[in-house]
Amino acid sequence: MEKHSVVQVGGNVESAVKGDYQIDVALVLKEAWQKTQQGRQAINIGLLFIFVLGMLVSFVVGEYFGGIEAAFKQPKVLLFIQTVVSLAIWPFLAGIEMMGVLQAVGAKTQPKLIFAFLKRGSWVVICGLFTSLLVSVGFQLFVIPGIFLAVIFSLTIPLVVEKKFSPIKAMVVSLQAIRFQWFKLFSLYLILLLMLFLSMLPLLFTGQSSLAFIAIVVFLFALSYLAPLFYNVKGILYREIFGLTMHKMIINPNKPSSSDDIFIA
Image (cartoon, rainbow, N blue to C red; front, side, top):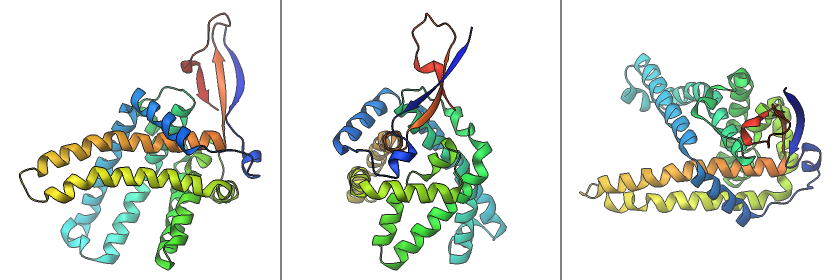
């Protein structure tokens, strides 16, 4: 006999917008690293699919403008291609974001999850375009506003998917909540960015030498950890700040529950 119960995991929106939550940078990184070691395959396969999809879309649209190389030499055409690619991949990126969120609560993830949230795809695309536009404008102004907005809006996609907020509401709630712990989130993202930069150093020093291939392999190996680590960090942050509403299904009340019994509401 199946029984269902609603479980609130982590924080909640009401407390978040009041700043009633705490973020420990060291603990977030430690937990995210542990979850990355436990399983990174699903996120990596999902990101590979998105990369291939983005390349295919770029090629197809580029051919319409006389070839991808010619298209990339025209700023307006390049901007158009980037916009089309964003429209194509954002719904699937939402699945990657949610993998990190689900792993943060101990649920198992599979590559097919990148297709699980396509019904919210239109809202995700609108949210992604709005936030990207504002961040881009911020960078063009004085850089610092761009950095501020990039951190502020970094958790909007899960709000659109999991909380079913509209893009505008997700952006407003994210601004209201993250402003209290902005520097801690910025510190986390900065650490991850520095780790990415360090992994790229062999590429910068080898150049066109015979060691370039080895440097590429080292970078890709590091990226296979850093990419899942990034999304696991975001998942933990989302759990601690906004929390998740989960349905817990117990088929046999006498059987101990597991992560397989839990699914997102």
